[in-house]
Amino acid sequence: MKVVGLFAGIGGFEVGLGYSGHETLELCEIKAEASAVLSARFPDIPITSDIRSIRRLRADAELVCAGFPCQDLSQAGLTSGLAGRNSGLVHEVFRLLRATRAPWLVLENVPFMLQLNGGRAMRDIIQNLEDLGYRWAYRVVDTFSFGLPQRRERVYLVASVDGHPEDVLLADDRPLERPTTDLNRFAHGFYWTEGRGGLGWAVDAVPTLKNGSTIGIPSPPAILMPDGNIIKPDIRDAERMQGFDADWTFHAETVAKSSSRWSLVGSAVSVPVSRWLGSRLKKPGEFDPVRCGDFPETGKLPRAACGDHRGRCAVQISSDPIGKRPAHLIQFLHYPGTQLSAKATDGFYRRALTAKLRFAEGFLEAVREHLVTMYEYKRLAATLGKAA
Image 1: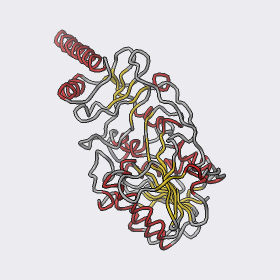
Image 2 (image 1 turned 180 degrees about the horizontal axis):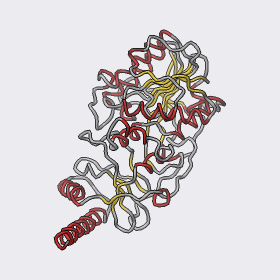
Image 3 (image 1 turned 90 degrees about the horizontal axis):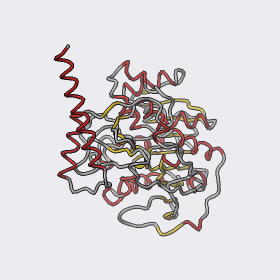
Image 4 (image 1 turned 60 degrees about the vertical axis):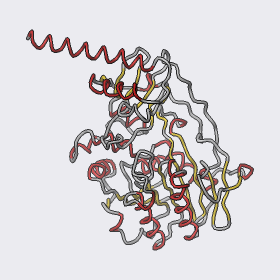
């Protein structure tokens, strides 16, 4: 298919779809640092900065993909829903589809939208699609089950005016058992910027790479290694955890701080997921209607569903379309991480001690040991500095 990428970010949809044989015609991205990456990686494709300036889609566009902004839909965000000025930009997609009805559409966003305000945002989206004559299907999908050590659940929605989205999104199901906590055997990812109200714990993986901390600072997760060392992964490994080549976002540094790369990677669509979608768009599977159940009229929405203007149904299916187990996190990491500093460790540890969260047995002890080690490093460095 010929693809138009809206809210393109660093090209996660477009890279994966390209691997599956689809051709990107046009891109739209407003962030200067993301646009710098797109210009370097897709040098022959025109890029528009603001979706609101696009009057209509290209007549030859067969597939529109859009990982629209999540700030108003995420649990750690503004929770304004589609009334927010960021996430509400998805209505610009519907405006363009009314002017030029592309045969296929793929959307991506955070799963919290299925429960925020009783699922109002997703209900709004599917109602708009039904009003436009689209058949739709959505599903929560976890990047972990595509062979990458990142626990990243996202909602993918596929819609079409002349095809069957359920045969694209809901035909594959290979549930994958997740590893259980074992501090002596596995590396464990967590967010050192949290500790009071959350942790983002992930076993043999990192938690969801984010576009910023709860206070809006681009930040990597921390990884507690089996030997007790706590590191922050290199940005190049973070890019690989999203399915990109190492240094994919390097060109962002021509227009922004190097830390901005964490935000770009955290906002991206995982490449293996879009590659799978691309392969199913090219060769659909066969959805089994026995998976269908009642779609709730109000309240929290199911994790998968499909329908059109004639009716909607909830779908019983896992978040694992292909069930490919990742390599162990300690084996996946190619680049040396940096030690979590004494200041960062101390801040996290103090928050964790006063929190009402339940931590894995031995975790806080390991954090304390790392803190002692880092303070010892500081003391030695100060001593050596005076001696010099």
